[in-house]
Amino acid sequence: MAFTGNFTCDSFKTALFTGDADFDTDTFKIALYTNSASLNALTTEYTSAGEVVDVGYTAGGSVLTPSVAALSGVSFVYFEDISWSGAITARGALIYKDGGTAVCVLDFGADKTSALTFTVQFPPATSSTSIIKLS
Image (tube, rainbow, N blue to C red):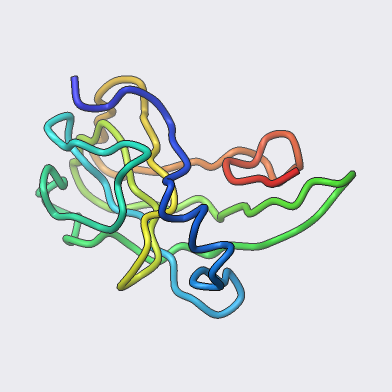
């Protein structure tokens, strides 16, 4: 099994301190992967290895719409849900800065399949549920 959990990538943590990741100006994308992908906390950038090749999905994934907020001493990033039309099967995803740093690996827990529309639903925009947070 290639996916073993959800990870914030080490390269993204470094990018925060070097100024190489800016959610206000950079473009962030999400790519979908099969269980043959090897993604983890050490993933440094987008890779096409193990990426979904189903009809309705384009290599490299799709652009995300991020928002940044702070509440009760926690800064967090949240994303709008994103969908693809078509019959798609994916085991997980990678959020990454277009042309750069891997941000986080998402493990769906099992293969997820859609017949018409494949949607990644992000958690609510709160300081306790967002997938990227800094306290």
